[in-house]
Amino acid sequence: MSTEQSYRKEHESLRAASNRAGNTALRLMVGENVRRLRDEAGLTLDALAKHLGFGRQYLNDFESGKHNPTVAIVFQLANALGVRPEDIVTPPSSGQGAAF
Image 1 (cartoon, helix red, strand yellow):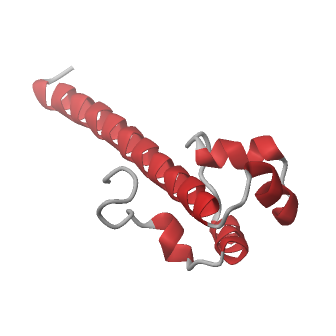
Image 2: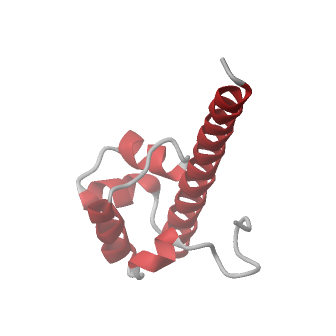
């Protein structure tokens, strides 16, 4: 393998790792937003899951950052929580939750 091929392979590996880390951070931020907004709405995890027709574990997986919600689910969550979809997918304003 040439030096250039070796460099490209290492670069791709680092980029993939960076993308995974970025995706994890985004999933965690969305989950923290959903949990915070649910708490602000005075809803339990069970109550929100039932309202949406989701299983409790399914919703918990979003809140814990294990899964990415689809765009459709973001809109369903926003509607159920009485917020805008962008409130779920953007970093919280200062003083709320973890900074992204």
